[in-house]
Image 1 (tube, rainbow, N blue to C red):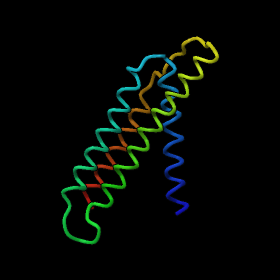
Image 2 (tube, rainbow, N blue to C red; image 1 turned 30 degrees about the horizontal axis):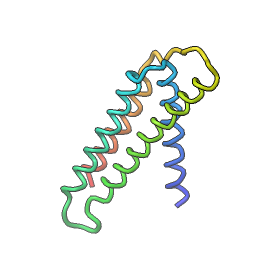
Image 3 (cartoon, helix red, strand yellow; image 1 turned 180 degrees about the horizontal axis):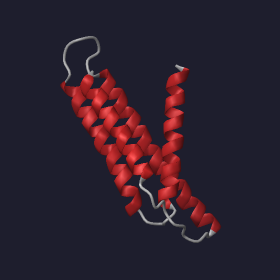
Image 4 (cartoon, rainbow, N blue to C red; image 1 turned 90 degrees about the vertical axis):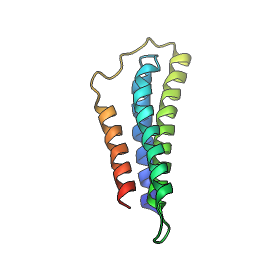
Length: 121
């Protein structure tokens, strides 16, 4: 059970950091692509898990991965909201967002892996 909570904690920490970095530009446009990737992959996992039949607890892996991706999307929004609150309270100047798309590739890979595991179940 501790491993499950560790996976969730790492996911929320990583996505909250990405959300804060993306929200540093004070624009929601850089935040839209990672959020769309996570929500789209969660929707695909949910649809795939609903089509599974037979076996013991059919579709459970897809449903759990869907929940993990929704938690990741929540972490992304939490990080962006925290950055927005920090900017409002400290009157800091707008920063620059990440130039490289490493975070989009990371979240896209996480979503693709979740969809693949969901389909392989």
